[in-house]
Image (cartoon, rainbow, N blue to C red; front, side):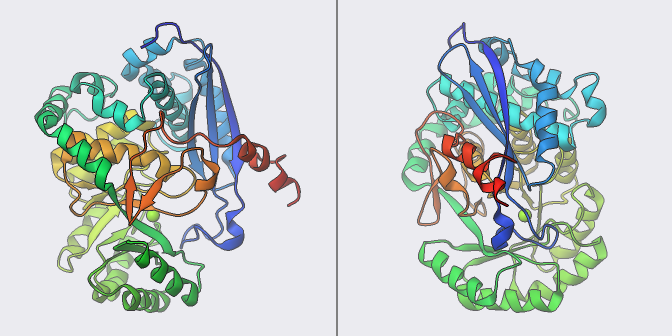
Length: 436
Ligand SMILES: [Mg+2]
């Protein structure tokens, strides 16, 4: 690692796409999202830059941008080798800033801002090493990898030493798995078929399209109207049959008992999981729902809006989730996500990442490749979410072939956008927004 790279400047942009016009991304809770992101560029004294982002839905992105600016002094002027050799303590300095933590701590806007900065740091690190982030992660020794994690609040479930042991055990299998993954890719499921604002005709043609593209798992949005949900589930099952997988996602609209009653009515369609049945903070509520769903063989999934590793720890400890849906732009970025993967491994829960949005597929694939190669070694009952939107804005977008994510070789975290996108989509002065 080069010793003299210094982060000289942090640039942060408010980038928005007017997706609400087509109802792309619409669900029971978020009926008109404009997919957006707070986008961070780390400038150094070399020609290497770091790119990272956190995903937002339009309004409020300017607040995340302001929070990034408030945190930036933690990285500006720092040597990269200092940061990456002391990553857990740098991460803690950001998340435990003695004044800024009051507006979190480790949740909400300030933690989204943390994720954008941390993601940019990992992208920078990988570019310095000339590796994609997934390869950087698998090439770190267990000790190095674990040294990036702040274990505060989770040692009752996993200690640093246990994490190292979990990773060490898998070392003999890594080479073979890496080869196999590069050849075959990682399973994906699609959410493209079932946004809540889509017509029946659109759903049918999308099911057909994604079946022909090799997908075997399909997710639809539910939760606004029970009869509509029954009809939509029936429609999708008619299109995909019962040999393929169906997942349903309520995006937090229900009370706990309402979730149970509603899902009993959808049980005949045999969904693999009910996603975000209720509030993301309600660990005991998820537990109640999960136990009620056991007899129907329906799993419970959540995570895309879980604030931090403590919420995940309790969800995992309580067997409140069957599928752990980490999100690459939430919690405090990769460092904290690694700790969640390690807890999930220890407690035997599958990680099926949330993706879509802006750049989430691009980023999260790296983590799931690492999980497969270095930690769990199985695809069984596991997929990465795939949504076919906004990929064209990235220099190295995901490659999904025959329903599988194919690992790329380009250095970084795959979230560098084209300058053209910055120009057109920066809010409020980009071309796209000026004429709204
Ligand atoms: Mg969801």
